[in-house]
Image (cartoon, rainbow, N blue to C red; front, side, top):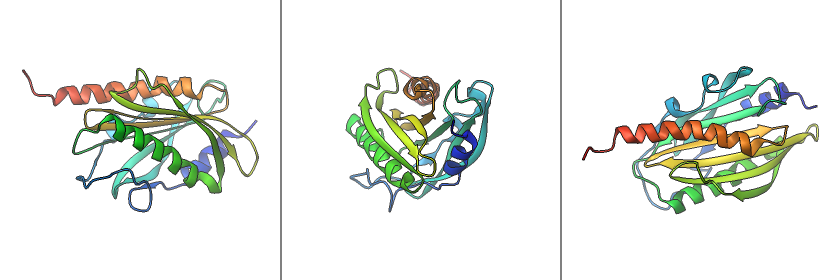
Length: 201
């Protein structure tokens, strides 16, 4: 069985840069985003056996956004790794914007991880029950050093102007099921956050 510590170490050492030179998903000039690490997953949201390790150095259009990395110690019980981050836009994205952001995020992860793992078999899934707008994908991954790997899932979703992203890497074939569960935790926070700033009637 693949060593979860080795996989986590490989991913934790990577730096994701989304923005210039990375993802190009914005057709128009927009204001800088605001990082919202308070809305992302933490070890407190997960069952016993998960620990938060060094975050990825993620940047969205030049703005640092903490991308949390949560490592599981028992691959039979859930994901070996969970990535989670959230940020706030200056305007509310529409459905096509989130769909484009999801597709580009999938393409970006495939390209960015290509030196250490091969991500393949991306498939669009029904994101029902996650976010007001959402894109959901499943994929497979294989570590180049060992040839071992498993299944993964990625969700990009929004509530009004707040966007959440969750990715799961599993060894037990339940990446999509687990992702839906954990994405709903983040989504509930997005929903509460945006409800608080809605004007009263």
